[in-house]
Image (tube, helix red, strand yellow):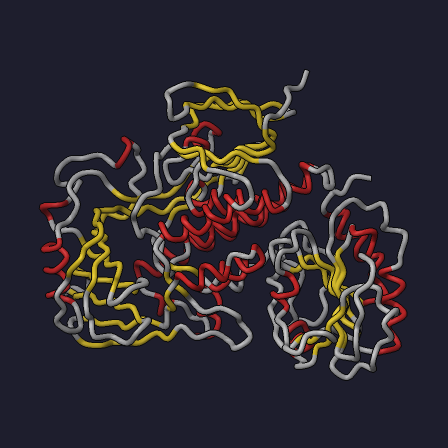
Length: 575
């Protein structure tokens, strides 16, 4: 007999990845419990880079504004070799990308996510450790030790391990974690220093020995505050954990993350700055410091049955390009909406297999690229500079080869199913006197969104047919639909597909005015022509935008019914 689930999902680990998973699940109405073995949030600025793609995801969650108020812009990096400036990287992106690169200490990221999760009636159960778990066809039984020392048995539908590089979930699931460790040890410190560099720029300064090897290193990343940086550098012999014979933290065989033992003093950091900084700088107000190690590893599977891993529990790698935390947050977003559909009985459990199929190739690429960049430099990429920037911003993450990306693909240079759904500006509505972005229209929606682009006023009748169709009335998957148009006034009407598909119409810039009762769904005009430029519709075209902001499908407007039937079948929607 099946046990009664006390919660839908148990999330182990309340770092940025676990918090993001909890936020997305709760936004979709899924019950979850979030536990973390630490008694309090750590005050360390470990992961500090926030990529533009992460900000887009947080925008969909309604979190972007608070992050923007707390973060600092990352404009670029100055590079020095043996005291001479050797290059300058400007972090520039196409003007249609809504967010720039940003820096925010990890503890601030966690604080903002904690507030978001608390607003969704979920609290972190601090000091609570996962001891073991078993799973069966109906759920997962977990044994927890709470902050009081008492043990508790918890029954959940699913378990997500967001518990870091030393993941208990990964180990008990029996997943392999192949890879190795870099021999070097590093120091991290959060300090203030007037480096004399332009606002928003980081510094990478190295010393090359005669044989070409790097024997000294300083990397400075700006943080919010006056002249504040997170600095990393090679560790001096007296602080080496290897020289002292100490094992990695928590007795693990994976050397990754902050090490135990004595942390560097300000004098250790100052000595490296004196050797390698582009100008003299006196350090002060060191908030924390530590020695850390770097490994590169990835699991053989992102899950098994009802148990999954995400973030550092699934992939670890060098911090080059600030890819790790951001990749983990995308893991969480990818998994959460799929779990929500399955838990609500609106999609089949086979949908969950697409999590590994879509995310593990991304993890493999990130591990390989960051290792390559750490050992050879970002310049080793042969791609055009624009492509390099888009990839570092994580705007090129695509699931084109995944199991959900079928159907017509449109022009070769257009966004394809599986690609990121581009944001665009210049959308107007009859009542608003200011233009909107597509992100404004998608914000706070939790399901799929169907965008119907109307290039020809004669196709408005097709929109009415789509939004008034009865063939999908019984389809239980929640797909939001919006209609965008470049034409005249649009009047919102009833939800399409009995609220199963949220539909939005986008009218072409030169479309004729629209009678109030024609569309029956929210509509916007592509007044700037940016939607047409970025999405490359081939005439009147429909687009499905997934809950994680990737394109699910694109199709001719007159083929909407067939295309939606095909896409929903890929989600294994139950009959």
